[in-house]
Each structure stands twice: as C-alpha cells, then as structure tokens.
Image 1: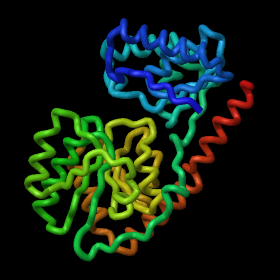
Image 2 (image 1 turned 30 degrees about the vertical axis):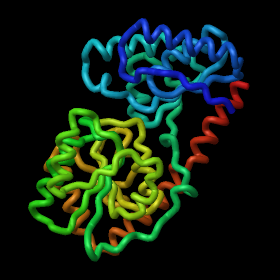
Image 3 (image 1 turned 90 degrees about the vertical axis):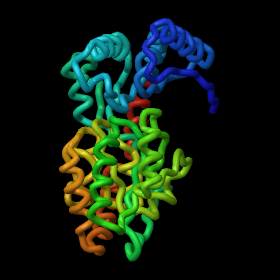
Length: 315
C-alpha cells in the first residue's frame, strides 16, 4: 500500500487550482496504473473520476453527502451539478450513503439510477467499537458531541439548549470533541468559562469518551451518514439527532434514541428532556437495542461486501 499526500482545498472554488488537482490525479493514476479507481468526497469524485475516465481506467465513486452547496438553489449548486454530471457519468458505479442523496442525484440527472447503490454509510467496526457497560449516573448525566463545531452541525441550537438546560438541571455535563471553526472560538471559550461545557479539541480515539457518556447528541442540518452516531450506538449509547437524511437512518426513533426537528431549539430541548426523564434501566436498554441495530444493519463487513461485489463485476 502506498500513501501519496495530495493537497486539496476542500471548499476552494479557484478553477486554476482545481485544474491542477485534476492533473495531479491524472499523473498519479497514470504512474500507478490501477485496475480500478475508488473515489469519495466532492473534488475526488469529480476530478478523480474524470482523470480515470481519460486514462480508460474503471472507477467507483462514493458520495458521502451533499454538502452545504446543495442546501439552497444558488449559483454554487448549479455549477456543482454541472461538474458532477460532467464527471460521474463516466463512473462504473456510484455509491450513496443514504437513499435521499441518491434520489436527489437521480432527479437532477447526475447519475442513472441503474448505476447507483445505497450502502449503510461507511459502516462501523463493531469489534473496535464494542459494547461497553453503561455508566452509572449517580453524580451526573453526561452528554457528548463529536464533530466539527460549525453551524451545519446544529451547534447554534445545541449551545442554546445547553444554556437552557443548565437553568433547569444541576447534574448535566456536556463534552465536545472536534475542531471548532474560527467564528465559534469566542462562544466555545465563553461556555467553558461558565462551566456549561468541557471542550476536548480533536481526539484521535473517541472510544474512551463514548464509553463515559450516557448519550451522544448531534443535531446536524445534513449528512451523508454520520459515523459518530453509528459508533456510539455500537458501544451501547443512545443518541439524539435530527430528522434529516444521513441521521434519521441511523436509529429507531424512541427505541435506540430520539429524533428532533432540524434547526429547532424547542424540539431539540424537548428530546433531550425526554432522554433525561427516562428511567436508568430504559437508558441501558435503549443502548443495547442500538448495539443490536448496528450489528444487524451497519457492520463494516456489510459495506465491504457491497464494494467487493461491484469490484468483481468490473474485473
């Protein structure tokens, strides 16, 4: 296995830099001469698939989410749709991580439905993320957030709910893992100073933090498939998330966690109160049901087998 670092501006829109990225991909593929090219995320899906096509190498793309550009009807979305059409019709197969994203691409005539497949996200390694005994809640009830601290993750709503909960409860703790975007620096520091949250920054291994929490909360606006929701449930922890594609598929509402309405402080607050009010034994059982769901539907092996099946068809 070779690791070839390839600098990429995830959100950059400079066409000159993007064309240089396309040339980099083309050179890498030409030098390695692979049998099949696998790509994922926006720019590799566009420029990597197109580079593979020009060199007549079969390719399989994975759309890991639609991103912010797809949330409106602006010029950025129109350009992105054109670029996707330009590239993805060359792919042998396009994987999606939820059905809604696949339907969007089909409706926009970016991909043919016959060339698309929906996988259960990236899957979760249920051995690495093994079930852990549920922590007691004698001293506190611990909530955890894992992800980039940014608007699209529902951070504004979550911070407001945390302040409201702290007015009504004195035994709650909220821990945050992940980098924050610069415009949230002051807000994070303010909440830490008040004692409302604990900020742990980026962590290479989230398992010790999941093990110690009672519930994972991620109120995202949109996702491809949120891996943290899968990982937490695999370890036997209930989750609270939004009723949007990429989140709602990961749980059974009321059974393994709770769904709230997107961008709604009131709905998120009510669902968190619903969880807080659950008897301790029901919290444990909710986590156990989540573990069973992950093993049955979201194991990494299920996803790998889907890709291997398509790979065999190409080769």
